[in-house]
Length: 200
Ligand SMILES: Cc1cc2nc3c(=O)[nH]c(=O)nc-3n(C[C@H](O)[C@H](O)[C@H](O)COP(=O)(O)O)c2cc1C
Image 1 (cartoon, rainbow, N blue to C red):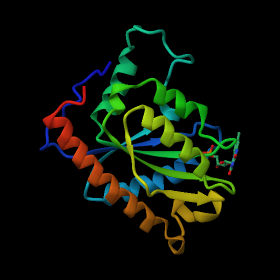
Image 2: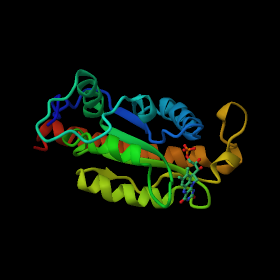
Image 3: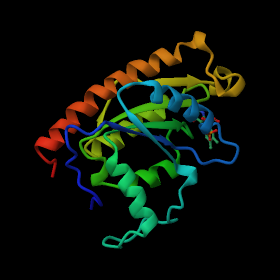
Image 4: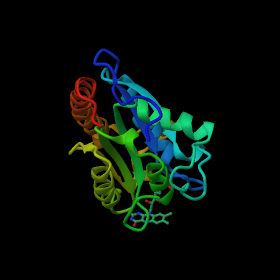
C-alpha cells in the first residue's frame, strides 16, 4: 500500500528518481550513475533524487503480506512515491538485471504506478540491453510506461575518462537528452492524469 498520496498536484515540479541498481564490491555503477545524474540535473524538466540501492538497508527477504514497514522502509517508499519518473541505471549480469535491483523494485508496488521509466544500461558486449528488455516486462507489471529510447554503454569502462566523464564523441549525452525529453513528456502527462483522476 502506498505511504503517501499518489494524487500529486499538477502545479508541483516533476521529480525524477535516478536508481543506481548495482551493489557489487568494486562496481562501475556509480561512474555511470554520477555521469547521468549530472546531465539530469541540467535538464530543465526535473528535480532529481538519487536512490543508490547499495546505500539502502533492505531486509534480506521479502516481508510477509501485511507486515508493517519499518520507519526506514517507509521513508524509502515515500521517496519512490514522490517521483513522477524514474531512470534505472542497470548493468547486465548473466543476461539479466542485478538481483538487488529486483529486490528493491519488489519492495514497492503502488508507488511505481502510472509513472514513466527510462533506462541507462551498461555491460560487456551487451551494453546491458538484455537487462533493459527484461526490466521493461517487470515495469509493465507495475503499471509503468517505459520510454523507447535509452542510453547503453557496451564495454562501459572504455567510455569514461578522468573524473567519470563520458567521452563526448560517443554521443551518450545526446542519447541521454533524447531519453530525458521523452521521459519529461510522459512524466508530465501522467502527473496531470493522476492529479485529475487517481490511478486507484
Ligand atoms: C555476475 C556477472 C555477470 C555478468 N554477466 C554479463 C552478461 O551477461 N553480459 C554482459 O555484457 N556483461 C556481463 N557482466 C559484465 C558486467 O555487466 C560489467 O562488469 C558491469 O560493469 C557490472 O556492473 P557493476 O560494475 O556496476 O557491478 C557480468 C558481470 C558480473 C559480475
